Image 1: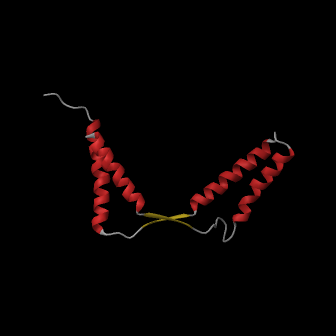
Image 2: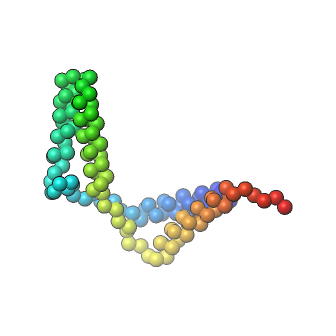
Image 3: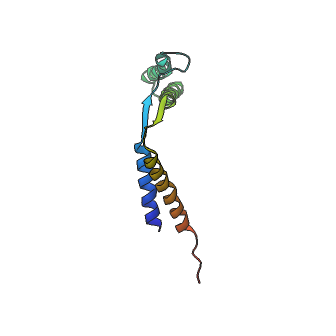
Length: 113
């Protein structure tokens, strides 16, 4: 029962994720075209590291700049569900929920008669 549920859950998750389209949006923390400003801490940090590899400020600026850029990229993604038929959506969701139910059911302790 566990393997059947896991297969259904995996198939439903695959079909659901196959229907999702991801697009990048515009970078706009403080307005349009501000990506260059987010590069400044990273570039200053790299400059400090070239001057002295043991610079705590250089490592902090480089790390924070890289994290800031990564978060900015993730924050500007747009996720859309691709148009599909109602039947396909119901099959996908039934596989997901049914598989999850079977997995949880198989993890319950069995009663002995």
